[in-house]
Image (cartoon, rainbow over all chains, first blue to last red; front, side, top):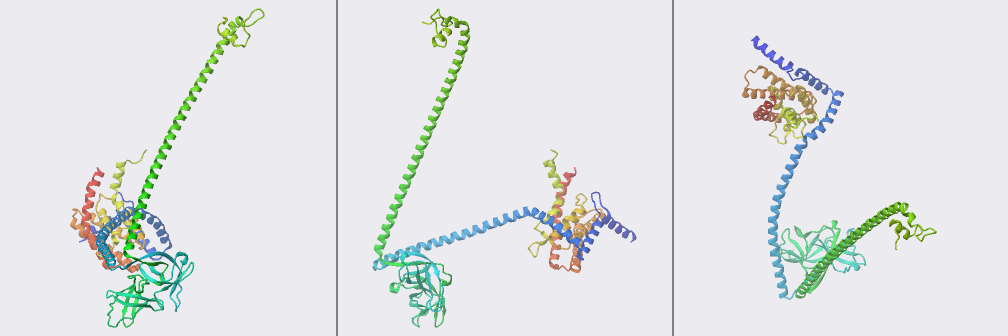
Length: 397
Length: 172
């Protein structure tokens, strides 16, 4: 029993105190140090705070550096994940697009069919010109719901024009000035618009309430209007085009309130449209004509552009040729100048040599050529004298 | 140039890999001890310290373990000295096991490791709650201990492979 206890104590002592070959500190010392740190820390000793602050300064920076690879992998993972999400979304959108494309084809067919049928019954199509206007004043009073826009007669605004926000009806122009106009909103008490409630196709009148919505007036009590039924302009009276969305039926009690699609408190820009009636055939012809004209114009523009490109290319080519020619001439001139320089140098060299020879010969044969009283030789400095000297005193005939 | 050649640099890095791993574990933002999952976390540093203290071939150095503990305390914002004490207690336990063991066995080491981490965590839990009034989720701590205990086996084989391949070569 005693031996076992001794062994245990020896092992514990060894574990605590033996530093081992490569250990600088013994475990006991370090544990004591940790305990001291803990005890001091529990008493909020200031020195511990300073140590903590110092270690924090180093550790946070080191932690940032050490975390770089991990952050890189994290980022890569996020990017990869995003890629897969986008890919899945792309596939979803693609399939949705296919569905929409097919729906669009059906819509096109219906429109064409509508045109055809209208042409059979000799009905008219409505064509509109758009003017974008900015809201200048939208101060609402309890009596009047209207806005002032920055377009007037100068911009071809006329009384009764339709005002839209996007595709939704906002109201109509009731006052036109030179640079501004007043638009009566649908919510105004005086606004009365013939509408059609779909899908039942009930015809009625939409009247403003003086607040932010409108109500349906004048409809038969046996007409059952479904919840969320959409209200469109009916086109009756010829003020508005048929089928402009207005709002949804909000509640189905005695008062049929309409929640308008357009929020009149948030208006900043509106579209002002003028509708002109045109026979469908005429309109189609005009459209075809305009299309042809546009096509011809486009073709002309294309040809013109091509010609301009050709001309430009030719010009560039000519310029390049001129440049090359100039460079050639310059090079030739440079060669000529070089040749002339060499020739001049050669002449100078020959002259210098001749002069040297002349001087040497002059000493020797000068007397044989020089003019004196008794001979008829040459005067010093004359070309004849020079020739004579160079000829070693032999007289030139 | 008297610079260290590329091969010897790799050799130095590999032979000091446990120390590097220890400091990366305590410095890294990604702490295995505080994973997002409620039902999975483990203390890699405990495994590393216990294994290295148990083996004679790998030497982490008590001073460095103490320093790692201090860093861990700063990073995790717990009273300074608490992790150091825990790490050093693991060292004591491992050193004791090493001294009394004649024939090492993985199973014994493993069971002993469980007792060690239970004791150390209990000690730290007691200190944190009683002295420093830190609230530690008891359930999370148990989950942590459980997975640390389980994963010891996997890391044991990994470290043993490292020991054979790297330290073995390094000592030649």
